[in-house]
Amino acid sequence: MSNVQTPLTPALFNVLLALSDGEKHGYAILKEVEEHTRGEVQLSTGTLYGIIKRLLADGLIAELRSRPAVEMDDQRRRYYRLTEDGRRMAVAEAERMAKVLARARGKRLIRSFRSA
Image 1 (cartoon, rainbow, N blue to C red):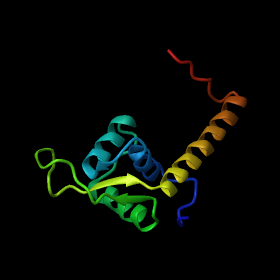
Image 2 (cartoon, rainbow, N blue to C red; image 1 turned 45 degrees about the horizontal axis):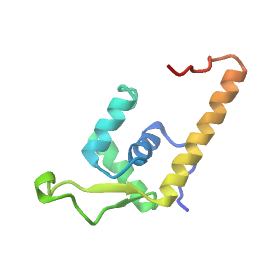
Image 3 (cartoon, helix red, strand yellow; image 1 turned 135 degrees about the vertical axis):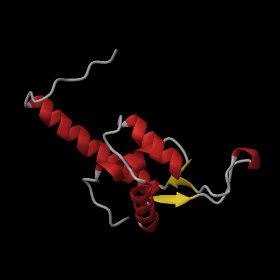
């Protein structure tokens, strides 16, 4: 397994989360994190590619060798996917966060969320 330990930084966790539903290139990861966190987690391109480099080195993500069809691709883009270790790390962090939220609810710090 990797050298990365939980708790993960918000930036690192959000990169793993962005890749949890499929492969993406760097800019798509950047935009998804920005949109899904409503700007609370802001990644510069330098920060994103530093995280990607670390995740690649730790075996939590992999660069894809195959590419989309030429008409749908930009040759400068590199595409990434979660590895099984990366998925396990993301799940472990999500479960850790869920336990913390449950404790906060139990202490009446926050209310339970109600689905619409």
